[in-house]
Image (cartoon, rainbow, N blue to C red):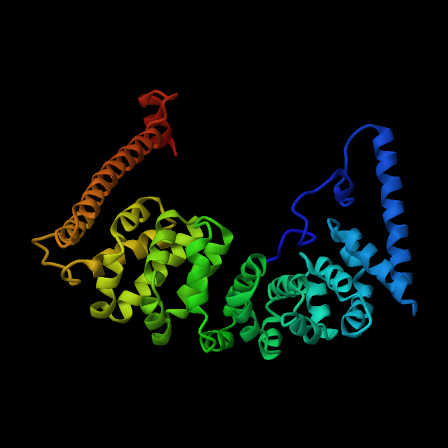
Length: 397
């Protein structure tokens, strides 16, 4: 996932308007837009000329201008692709302004797959990796942001992991600034989608740091979604499951995302818990139940994504006293499964909440069924056509 354009700017001014966006107004406005496009093109040519200069001051001026031009314009990112190699050379030079060169490359890579690949091919990973270990916290943050952006490309993922970035990103997760931690966990989430990278990530013992970040971040945030996505991937390994359950607040943090996260985050959360329970029900059933997961699961069966709903129902089945279905004479409805679980819950508060959720779930289910029947009735008998007319039309076909 890319960071917001310019990667560091939290506000936008009128000077940041994207020249790629046409303005349909008066003839004078059209003339103004044409003049603006011409001006941008001239600035691009000038920046490309300056970045090739041997004068360090002119190179620095070019890097700053490239950063400005590519802040909001996809067209400029394409036109300035030739600047990638000289900017990478600036990164590798001990006497250059690394920050300006890195920020220019970062903006060139945003939403541009070709530039992402070109930057890695030009040799940018080695200096970027070294910046992760810099005592300069700003440079650390920019390096983490750069790896987040570059790791969005599937082509780059194996090269980034081979460069030794993963252990250093986990170090940032432990000791970096808050912004660097956010970017590091999202970069790790991007890298985790490459099959060979998961075992490398697991070997760095990242779960305690992921849990710490998950506990303190907003559960509906993108950060929480990426943390939970990583946890879902890592609990596919026995070692990951053991670490999560032994980490104080680990399972609870996942349950809280299941209750309050975004739709996608909740899907990852229920997926992680289901994977744990399916791997060893006897071992993980109690730790999951103990964190009050039932109300959130009940809500997911109604309001989650289709995948979440299926996973929530399956997990509820596994969490009851006996995971095996009863005979056909005793239909194993969701209500029966939940009632079975509620009877085992310790604590009036949790049990009462679960019962209330069950009642609401049944009510919502009945309302949905009623709406479905009404819609079918409308489809079968359009309100604006007489019954006789409908019958005659059907018979004449």
